[in-house]
Image (tube, rainbow, N blue to C red):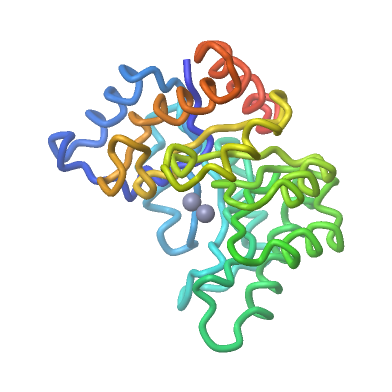
Length: 257
Ligand SMILES: [Zn+2]
Ligand SMILES: [Zn+2]
């Protein structure tokens, strides 16, 4: 039994699933995925996403606005708390910093939005889902300044170095690896994945993005999670069942499920 700790089910391509979300959910179960966290990235799309997964109790949700999201309503602590009062909401995010696609001078805007999410998470006591890309020093600095350790969370789709993983672990965070771990060029990242303590490790697909080998470049879905699990199990010298069990236990502990 596998748990996908980060996916965007409302964006998954249903072409190979008879254009039917129920078909996709059955395919996930058949591939061994028993639980999924469907992550919010903008408040406009959130209500439709929430309705889509409502009939599927195996799907948890989170609420937040991605650092690169533009043009929609800017999240406030109050608005995030309103949405997070829903018992299906297990986390705040995804939030964080992404300087890779930084246009103009909006680093300060991203930082303000990130601080808002941390404040909301602390106010409702739910953990954070952190996205960080080319912004590791500022990400760790803001987590410290805003005392994110009070709620913890996960550094999702981790692609940074061991020093950054270590800093996150020291703040009580978990580290989650996506299909990137299977890419040929990801040897340094595999070395990080070998070192993360087994009781702090999560796995994800980040569907519909970042399909693992052998589906790299194709639309991703939680049905491919086993390829991420097999890769990490192999590089840690574990049976895949053991890795699945440990990451599922970690998910339940972190998200209180
Ligand atoms: Zn992300
Ligand atoms: Zn995401």
